[in-house]
Image 1: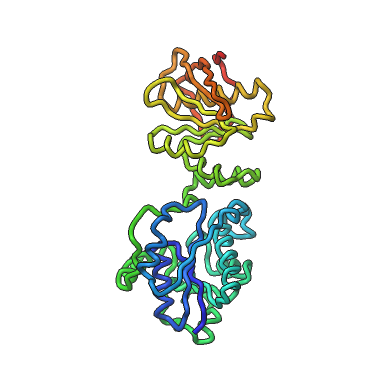
Image 2: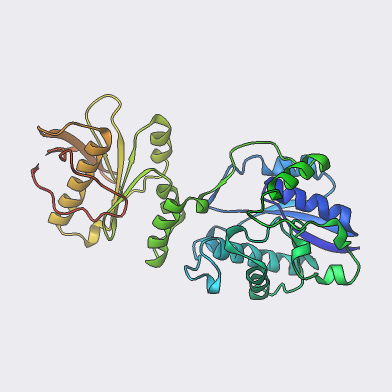
Length: 342
């Protein structure tokens, strides 16, 4: 029997991969879940692993720092899936060496995330796992691993599923039910599957400014850049506002309207590098965005409250809402404002 490290994400694909590996050969399987700042719905993963695989040891580890260094070029691999998988497999390779595991098992499918057989082989080589990554869901489309060649696992048990194939997902769903590889349903999503989020993230990665706190802000629907070093986030619903409350930093500015049910706005900038005029412009930009997102009708000025988190004093400014033709997108560099009074 040889030791295997299985990457378990809590998805049906990862659970099915482990079930197939169990049936295929003599493997001492250890499960690992890598926590990511881009993954949501991880609360039940440990419990689902315990329920589905009570005989296999389970551990979790964080990849926060690794993910904040995601490479935009992906070293020849597609971004973001190629870069993300490189981070995962790189960490798995290091853990496998510590555990003396000879096989790494994943629930990957050929073609998913833009990685075909050649891309997967390049990925394995990049992290020093050539011939040691077993992908049970698509193994028959890939070169045999060392474990298969040595007879430790039976290749005939594995599948030949390719992403985009008309019957592939149906086969996986049916087999998962037959083998009892269906984790409890819950909201599990990867933020990197959202093209708009990826576009926002790429800008900050390229500038070397991505942090775990910023990644949380990037999730908000109303996220805007009003200058190269200034962002505005508007929370409309109670749920959004409760979340945003936990993300404020001591150097942020809090902005709101003096009305019931007001949006809550976070303004973040490198204030020490801003002139007094730039500070006023950034806060005025944030006020106009808040009024626009709140759906306030133009025509007369509105009073807007703002307070620096490091101060107790709340200040007010009078701002004219933007006209009907005014639109703002997350990437806009908002021009100097007109009709702002202090």
